[in-house]
Image 1: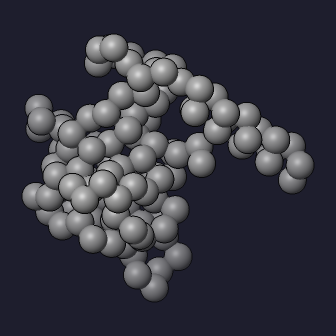
Image 2 (image 1 turned 180 degrees about the horizontal axis):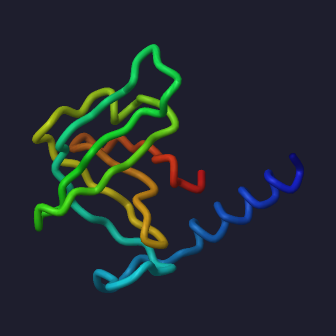
Amino acid sequence: MVLQTRGALEWEREFRAAPPCVAVPVKASECRWEQRFTVRSVDTHSGEPQSPEADFLLPSGKPWHLTFRRTGPVLSQVEPDDRVVGLIWRGRVVEVRDAAGTRQDTSDGPL
């Protein structure tokens, strides 16, 4: 347990220290960048043992599937065709933000 906690804390430190990207990276990168998405679908799996999940679309139309640790605060409020902003680090969406600025970590988030 101590090793897991230590590893998680180190991962969080690396994330917080990562600078913003100056341009959209072409491969997974140590910098952080924001990407706009359109919500395609949301499944909170209420009452089920599965993780909440959502499908987002990039402006190009390419889908991006995400899982979350819990349903709120963003995932429980968004609907198909809503716009969100994803924070991407190391090639993964680690956080989403809705139009009101509310933030939620994904399952890939270091926090």
